[in-house]
Image (cartoon, one colour):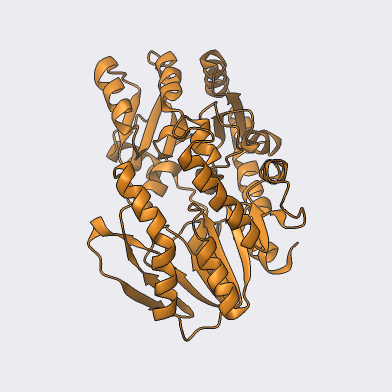
Length: 401
């Protein structure tokens, strides 16, 4: 089977490790031929080119800037993506007859691209629903409900659902939300197809753990909580800082934040103002280095803004599970990621409005017995294998079960 993968996610090689390349490798491993369009933004100064690997072709299409740019440029670039992708398929993949189209959100502006390939090749279309836009932007105050931009993108969203033959949602709560707010969708279209990876467990020795902590100035004798990922509006950074402020005098805990985003400066200013001795902020690390740092920590953290009415399910959970870390989720009440963590026996959850509850859970974690933590690590590994192995999402897409 020939598979076309459409994304704005920037990757060069299918050998990279993330939820998308892991899935594509699973298709290749099972004998399929995969073509991808993974664009490079203009600011990277990369010309359009094709990267060819065994049973895989990746078109690195040059497009306008989408990330870390002004609203006008981002809007123009987003609207232009459909036309650019269709032209690229005509030029670079005219020799391939596609049987299946895979495409994650964001963006929601691929409906014309999908419709074009479906009409040309008779391909089946599978949407990997990772982002429910524009409602997520409305939830956190980035867009006005029923405003001009909302109406435009909401129309695009509905067309994308319409053109998709099946819609893979990250969790049960995602399926329920999608069907409740989009009654026009055939209920048989929507199914659970969770974020999945090829598990590569990152356990390290005590000696390696000490070496990594010394290298990154992470205290040896403290319980280290790590947050790794985007530092943007969806993560509710102001509340995260309130939580950290409750712990600024806690000599048993250390909080490491690794990432980047529009709220990075807010965290930086907090640290400059209060100078907490148990908080460290770092920008993105190379993937290999980041994985080792996570493995050298004790607890992974997930934060989501309390205002969300859509059920997010951040994929950074999987990185923590690969390192066999217990996880503390601090989120809204709509997402079911906290439910999964607690039911799976590998972590804790609290609502992202209560710093007192957060402080109580931190104290509870610090007082956990060794056997309890060991059991949570085992549960984390087992749950990853049973629920989030990439073979599960591959089978769901291929067979529908």
